Length: 194
Image (cartoon, helix red, strand yellow):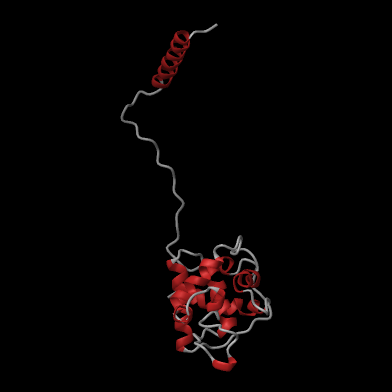
């Protein structure tokens, strides 16, 4: 039976042997390790088509020429995504969602033509817990609220856009978001190439 004292002697001898072997190979005490090569990053911030539309370029697309106000709303959506450190794909999903919901218009209450109590760029509803009417008509708040829900969707950045948008929005027309993907990708790309 080995005693604790014998174990300590064996362990010390092992460390001495290991230390001697390790030290025997070093002759230059000023040696510095070779730095690990780093991956060269490109200086361009322009996202690739794959980053914008990972499921490929869609068919049956719709587009229009946005007004200055609509462009400014798209910019706000994109900038909020950047501030939240979300990838360009998230920005495409958010812009496409707003294109479907409001054509990038920041609507307040529309009276009798209002869809329930839907408001803002994404037609989010105060009664569904998205925020107050004042919050939902603030483009930064509304965008942040959308992205907060989107980033909790597992695999949102690789799934079809309409599936990701629908998971967040729970729309009565779940496939309608898909037709805006190319226009949204173009707006996000234009933002990143400025």
